[in-house]
Length: 262
Image (cartoon, rainbow, N blue to C red; front, side, top):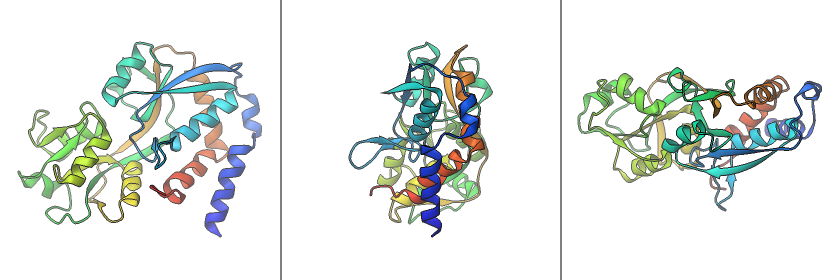
């Protein structure tokens, strides 16, 4: 019954137009180009049929509907995303991007649409370490990370010794490539936010697990070129989705009900 109620809540929130939404800006059918990575389940990824799906896609579709805008999508790697959005190649970037002060001189952020905490993702049969301290104490253990990301800096400064060139950190272009290396035994740890980590664990059939304490809190936001006139309407839409329960319903759909690989 609880699952049926949750699904009903998703349907109601996504199909109805709440009173709060009536006062949202009308963008007059404006086309918005959104760039993403499609490598961060369950926020955005390719399903078993190769279709781009996820929490952020559903949220952006609902935002566009309420603002009377049309969204088209492009794909790009994480390391190229912030520079490309900063240069105005795209209107919005989305891929679970942590709101950080050092990025605000390059791009503008929306208000936070989600809060998550950093966790340690490991193979399901891992027994050599169970927390950050025991990982750091074993010089044979390796960590995967994407350069310039929050997991990279957490790994350097909260798990290891603060040396950004530490050879125990193996760099990968995409988050998914790091997880693939973990599965293959090429590295022993991937740091990720709890939302993505739980998605990978749920889809792994016991092949992956989360160990240790959470390592910090991060807020996710959409990014825009500096001075974008889309920031205010997107923020208004995020506030509306939070107020009427749509964000909670999306959390239920993608973090509780959705089964990766099915």
